[in-house]
Image 1 (cartoon, one colour):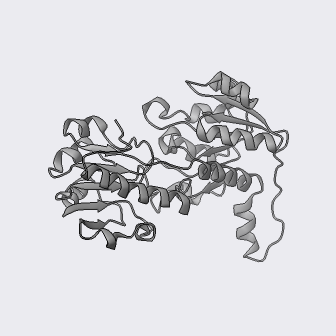
Image 2: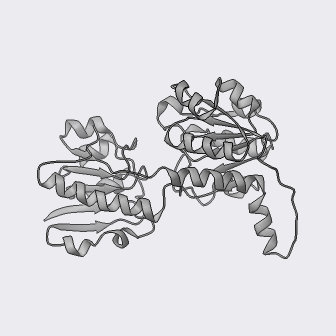
Image 3: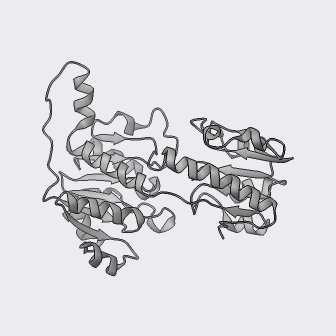
Length: 316
């Protein structure tokens, strides 16, 4: 039987979306519901597995990890890309890498949950309601405000459409901004500097990786309006986390809504957890029953296709 490791099942829900018992005659599954302590721990625990089923970018599949898993033949990830996988190292080992489809709308929905939560001071008001208080803050309206989108791809475009419905002005910047899409969505293309200085809300929707690493640092925070809000539902390293903590601690900006972090899961003592103007969620932008159903169903389809010698949804 093929030994298959299901990684990153933090909520221990994979079996709710796929019946592993029906596949027990062909595969030997082991579910890992906790993060590995470090890469050495991952190598030790995964040493005799032939297939890894992984959830997004929760576990780094590095060259060192790949080179030390001698039995590994297949890596199957949720989503159509995963920057945590060293594809070059996998290719050299002739390991097949496959992905799945993904719904982008949940990330857009969470983006707006964070924007609305920040605008209406929901974190403070909800906490205060349970302590017996009433109307302790004053919120902001969205109509007429400027939202600057860093990235106008699948998620950014959806965010732009909803911003228009709220009566907001929309600006956008990225290194490969599609001007025709800006025209189609009635979005004003601009420079990064203009977006940073002008926007009331700055929402990030570009891919991770070296291109946008530290795209937002203390330099950008110092250029933002004192009343600005930053929202990041893309990738943690796009925003320098230490600088974000400084900016929020010093009230350089009004607040931030964050779903992604430099290192995940976020440590219990991370300073972000203790800042009143930080609205935090635990990387749940893609965590929906609908997406999980797609992920786990298609992961098994990919595995079956690989075993038949006809891989599908390959990532190269």
